[in-house]
Length: 262
Image 1 (cartoon, rainbow, N blue to C red):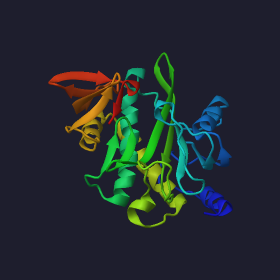
Image 2 (tube, rainbow, N blue to C red):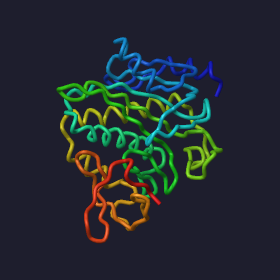
Image 3 (spheres, one colour):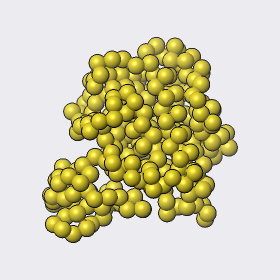
């Protein structure tokens, strides 16, 4: 997409939201939208719901410290600033579930809510065994709980060539191309709906819905734990966000750095 045209369309974004995306910061290029959003917060220039959007991210961050790579002009790369001060620090994973479900809702409207579309713990978007999108949430905490959250989201939209075979995009899956500004609007609307549900206290419902679409849930699959391969079954996610896995009839819980999918 022509960058100037995209920039003009971004400036005309009008998502049907109360606050998410009502302030949009467009950057032709940046190292990381999460870093830019953090700097805006430090300068008190980001209202709640502020969105930082870029056409080209040169040093995007993913889970486990990995880089997030996306072809310029073909995908969604953005960060949303929220201030979920209603959540104590111990409940950070509730926000992670809400965000993941918002991304899932957006994708399900485009791909149909079928067994192929899943959320991979903690909050990646998968289609079959290929990654469609990733989420990185960075929270700032104080003594009362969460002071602010920067929700970084990268979703493959129109890119068709990838360096790794485990990546895919909307265009690959449907054979269509998509107008990125319209994709941004729908995504922000879906995210805010789930955020407002969380703010209203609908945690149990969101947890149930998260497990319903969790990748490999209740399936016997291979995992790497402390350098050795095991067969286990995902049976849930703990309130602190740890993955609950049943191995040889025993329940084990793992943090993000402690387990890998085989």
